[in-house]
Image 1: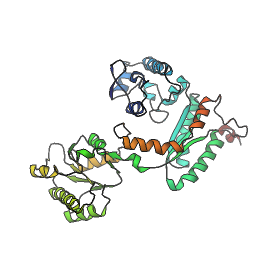
Image 2: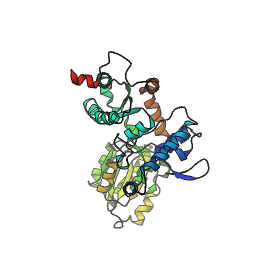
Image 3: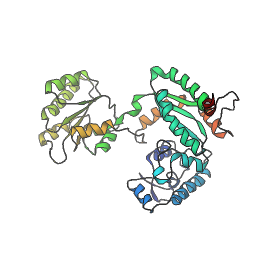
Image 4: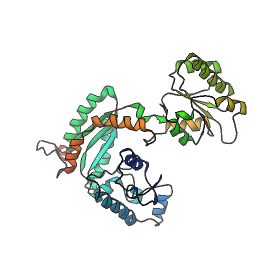
Length: 357
């Protein structure tokens, strides 16, 4: 995204860098040095064609680190996915960490076996580039399995790799909920009404595609949670009118109505009748009109993971409050300051030793 540097120059930065600087008021950092390499569409082809060189990328990275070191005691570099991401431009995460002399914290979702399998691929690449592994964080753990996973992952990581579990974070579905503004950007749609609720959150697990009769839709509308998302086609005037009627009925009774209606139609083929559009204008709940088929729109939503952004303060604050107690920052700082990557414990069994047992 485009932002202004301290000198007024316009540069593009990663959205996460923008969020971190703005939310935590890191005004001493210049945006110019916060995203040294951005890979937009067409970048990899330009690299292969020789228009971008490995050295020019490294010069940008090293200059950024050098400048930030002047004003910061600690530098955290966010990876771009698993350790192999970036290999196409000769800058995978493990290689960059090795060049910078940075320790690595690996993050994986879920349980025990699947998480270890995923982490092992990343650990081997770190080992190849001689990157020290500071520890592991397990994210989105099912709350009912939290104690079990924490215990076994702590034991497995110590005995197999000699590294600590720095964090074990239970899942909180709200943090994955998109706002109306997120969905509007995702679909490139028009927000017909409910403009005051752009930052209202919706869980994509509470989503329904309306293919039933009007009576079936109204039964569903009255049995589901108030904050449910509904997809319907632009030709279903009966469903749209039924949605408006249910909204009015609940408002008259003083009941909550937070449902989101997404009206779909193939690009340029279907439009809302002026009478329907006028009827929707008075609703105080969001209705989006998108030029996609219902299938295309629901597929996009299924594959969508909303990123945190500084406009969505509620979700950012909840994320900070949720994660902070579950991550051992003292141990993380100790590990990244240590002279070696083991537990400094003679009894710790390394993975290579296990192979010889």
